[in-house]
Amino acid sequence: MPRIQSTIAREVLDSRGRPTVEVEIRTECGKKGRAIAPSGASTGKHEAMERRDGDRKWYGGLGVGGAVQAVNQILGQVISGMNPADQVAIDTALIAADGTPNKGKLGANAILAVSMATAVVAAETEGLELYEHLHQLYLKKNPKAKIIVPLPMVNMISGGLHAGGNLDFQDFLIYPEGCNSYREALERIVKVYNSLGRVLAKHGETHALVGDEGGYGPNLTANETALERIMEAILLAGLKPEEDVSIALDVAASHFFDADINAYRLREWHEAPRHAEEMVVFLSNLAQKYPIRSIEDGLAEDDWSGWQTLTAALGRNLQLVGDDLFTTQVARIERGIKERSANAVLIKLNQVGTVSETFDALALAASHGYRAVVSARSGETEDTFIADLATASGCGQIKIGSVARSERLAKYNRLLRIEDHLGGPRVAAFQKRVPTE
Image: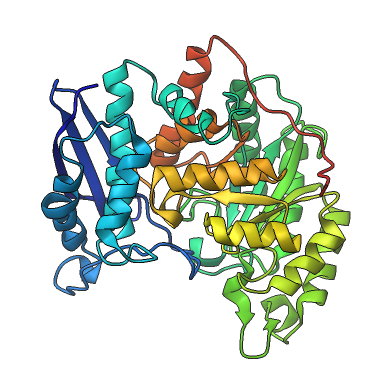
């Protein structure tokens, strides 16, 4: 395969109008690949570190000129002449060039954009779809993996840091059940989303505003009210709760956890502190009352004992996803497996910083029966890499955001094209019960 000839980075904007890093790699034969690093608002403290300039005169201190410079002056030289098909060797070289545990020297945003662009240009050079190339790479980590178009877990109502803090829980999502194709699943999602707009309008609640990920951002008084509105929208769409559509929550509990007293403060509790056991009871009651299939970050990122309690209580019937808990880090996933904390992993490329390390996290989860959900970030772009990644890994689930913003729709549309390229439906189907063994 032709070698890498040039690597160029530039500062571009994400979906919140904030700078991020785009990298373009060219090979000796003239093939090129381009990728853009996403950025999160709700970030776990164990994530790989972005590099931002801090110059208040340029994008309010959020500029990424230093990360761009790191690519153009250091990382580009490191991978010059290397084979883009050798993703592990390239990612290893990128990690070594940074030399820090969290990629804080050169920046995870710089390193990830190079890593992703490498995969894109390798696929171009091989004449493959990106998901086909990524699948070949992932088979080396997980030989049992199959190409599967993921079913979407889609944001309906936003709260937390994604919508001005109007609700404590960050995302209220829906999940299509029993669909025969991705195309059918997407149509069902859109039907409920449009119905929800009418439901919110009927109740006199703001429905014209959307959060960072495209979900409605109504001013509701309690987390349960959001669930009530979604249930009403499912029925208005002519669908059956649980049978046709189920619900997922992203609690993002780290953001209302008081570490000083090891307790949680929800506004509907009038911020009176309650411990993990009470949070577990609160979530259990919601799961009994509503068709909830999946709960993400139901407890704080370092509340390991609380997570054990949550998993013991709900893990046999629900998908319990660790996002801030695991941050796509192999060491933290290994601890979760050992301690029986959660039973699923949220996968975000920029939490760990390279494609190879992302595959390590996916393969580890799969080898221990943990499900995985490939996820976008609140700061996204037109880049559709994660659609191919989710398909290539066969994880079966993807969390992109809602169906109202073009940076989200680019990925949903990419999955439509992938399904066509595969010659028809090849989607995942899960039973409601999620065993822990």
